[in-house]
Length: 161
Image (cartoon, rainbow, N blue to C red):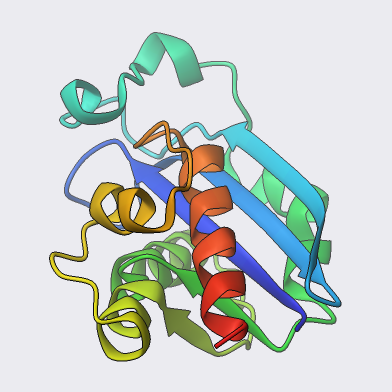
């Protein structure tokens, strides 16, 4: 199994307001690479600091997504799919952020560990902390790298059944 788990944190309700990303690349069923970065979003407005703890001061010197992309492009190549917990959210953040910077988004299928945890594992509720608890996966929720790593571990667990 070759895939990349991805998790974005956003500054506000705009889907192009990515302020952090976590990426975990899995090659041949093993975690091969991990990456995390803060991202400077297009606007200074931070509405979700209470959720993830990230403020404008934290990201004001971070790269914008278009400058970060060359560092992370490898996470989108030579993979069968991308996976995220509630993939519709992360897929739309990736798409809208790429659109904002006039970048063609990676042409890779997304899979959703929320749906897979329900269908393949019968886990309810399926919020990330609940699935991690059921599978005994450590989690620092809303830390982008921790969330991406947890998602990768969930996908690897599902791949074994």
